[in-house]
Image 1 (cartoon, rainbow, N blue to C red):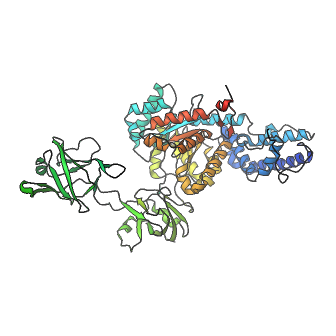
Image 2: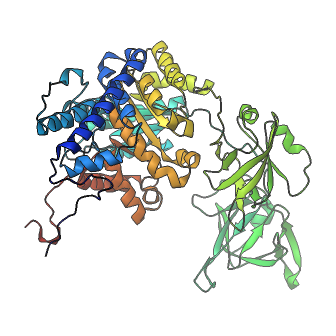
Length: 626
């Protein structure tokens, strides 16, 4: 027996003898007229800003302003009443806000016997023209896409793309629609070569592939640290019980030789000492931990010698390597060279004090334990941070609070780290989510990189954009370089950028075309991981209201790209990307297979979801469709 659905509680909906009770309808009409008046008043308030956008963006700018006015109040009670009456609850009104309100008003007027005058002339877009406008803007920015996959796939190009045409061709063939060039890596000549290969591969595939050049922006990172010790660790392969099953291998060469290709570590030894080695001979040593170890020589030749060991061994430049002569006497000894220093790192525990300094020379000054010190790559931010504000290090792995602040340094107390502590290395990101940082949107390097972007790119990514002036500066720079045909992608990476999103969009509408990238890595650190799901939803809604395409970015199918095997959570996350206009993949050894996986997911999801709207395709599960 099927249960009948009960209407919402009387607290939300007044009791009535029928759904069409005129008192309910009249209350709804009054609320909707008030909302409509607020939208038009907001449009008048933004009139000067709207007048500055490009003519083909005016309707979108007006709709965005209407959306902001609509969402300025809590509409949940109104939604429940509208849904109970079988009317639109305004839950999918983003692309045509005023038209949706007017449609509901018209129906309510008809139900209550009141006259309704058509007001479509006041509406910037309708239920058909709004989504169509988003489609046109998306095609202008990101190019065309396959008929049965409306969502584009963007792929970050590796450095090899500058020289490996076969690699680029495989990316295009697998389904790449937009090639992303990260200007934080490589150089202008490399980027030009990458773009040339993408154009060539796209032409061969008889389709268009857009090129995004992503500006580095003002990166705030940890500065260089004193080099770690020079130690080489040799470790055999062990089974589940800890027994060695495969030996470690070490290549030994003399100073005039080049190491053989492969993954085996290599050290340089004295040439005369190396000439004495023969197969089956043992090399005796006391490693960096003063442990007795032996390595067995397994081959010798023109490429040097190879030795193997069945015990973990740490070799440093001070480790003597000895050969035993007759009567087991150690008569020949050499010391290895060419051992690289370990990456510099400092270990931080909860309660530790870390000094973040503006001057790298401060690193040489003495510190009293347990204090530690690291420099900041953008020293000008130090004086803009206040005591009590939060600081996140290394993509949010390490959390700290500023206990003392000055123009020269910040004293940070570590408040978040794993029980065993966390390693902090050089060139790791620093985030200041509570601080209002005044940083230039475009660095000197960005302005230089724009010269290449204006020539070879279709769109430019503006990193760490925070204020409308940042966007205007980029548009002016492109105009000066005659790159006014180049589209702009607003990379939302900071809390201030998220909070300023509508103003950033209105500023970007002065250009030929624009989009938004949800850079979920930095944004999650800035906003808090627990808030990330809410934030990305709000960005999607606001972008749809502006008819601006969204790029769903950061760590999509990252495990598959790196290891070849996706996680279940990654598959679900990739499926959610169907609500955006483009999904970005990062580089990795399995990127071609990852593109195919994402292509398959997006094609399947296209039949089930369009933006916020579920699509009721016939289900083949459970015998619903034969």
